[in-house]
Image 1 (tube, rainbow, N blue to C red):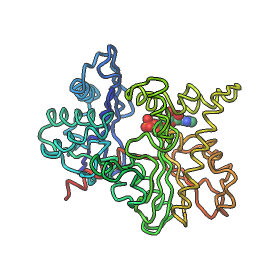
Image 2 (image 1 turned 90 degrees about the vertical axis):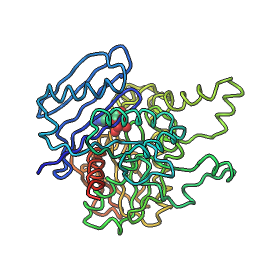
Image 3 (image 1 turned 180 degrees about the vertical axis):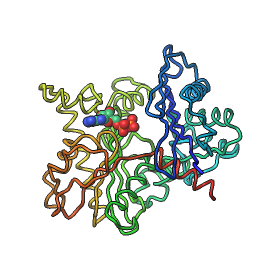
Image 4 (image 1 turned 30 degrees about the vertical axis):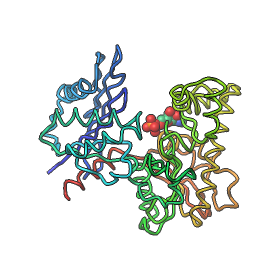
Length: 397
Ligand code: ADP
């Protein structure tokens, strides 16, 4: 019998949802309600080869999920007929207490609420999504899948910041890592593509979307990752700065009189590609560079430089690397970023094949040359499918 999982990703101003068949490995419906809480919201659902849209005011997350269900009805998608067995919630931060996919009862929801200070931008809207979905679908099991989970047993040397230990322990300051669902899924796909068990493969995964992170995975275990206590650390991102000298924050507070909230907003929302070049979409960045825009050029160069630095660092962390995989919007689509990040690394065993790299495809594929010691792949990520599979694994105990 067909069974499906509704995967909900509830952000501060949008709610994304997908109806996934975890056994067939496909998504039957995908939708988004955007600009929740603003004067003009927009909702979209794709189902059965058709796209349904609605422009309406969606006041809050409760209204957003109700609009989503109304659109399923409008599209003729009866969730019971489609075998809906559970709801999977993408959660950002599980702290040190939740790392396995977990059935969401009142006790777990209370723990997630306690974790809000660790991820103030991400966990509260996720929690809201859980509360609303549990209210609307009270008879179905709800399962939380956490972005931090794959990194919960990072070696202490990679997870610890070199700061006062008492302070770190009292305030749970450590490197948690994010995008874990994607890093795990892509690393499993990469091993499968090589025809080897994950336990035998050492790999680097580069998840390059609007948020971006790198991970080093030795035999299936994450041994380092670029995002830290929060998703702000590491690679240059669409609007986030990635690594900076922490001293900048104190300097700006003193010299520019900026408040902690001002600085946090600047580093999260007005930095990265946007801060340097005014644009986050790499298609537009390339267009600007071609038109001679020096800011876009600098943004691109800083982005690629940081990426190369992490690849080099993780080659050293792993010692032996079998495969490097690119994934997410930029990683899957931008052949120039892939080529530039790995150019000149032949002495380290990395040789990209230009024709393979520039061929357009939606499939997981090899883009390195046959004589490259390290295999380089493009592997499309599918976080919704990975979440749906985790959910049914929880249901099956
Ligand atoms: P998110 O982190 O929001 O899930 P995605 O993984 O969907 O983001 O990545 C979105 C980004 O992917 C866009 O901002 C854009 O920079 C990049 N992107 C998407 N398509 C292309 C393309 N064809 N060429 C280059 N970059 C692309």
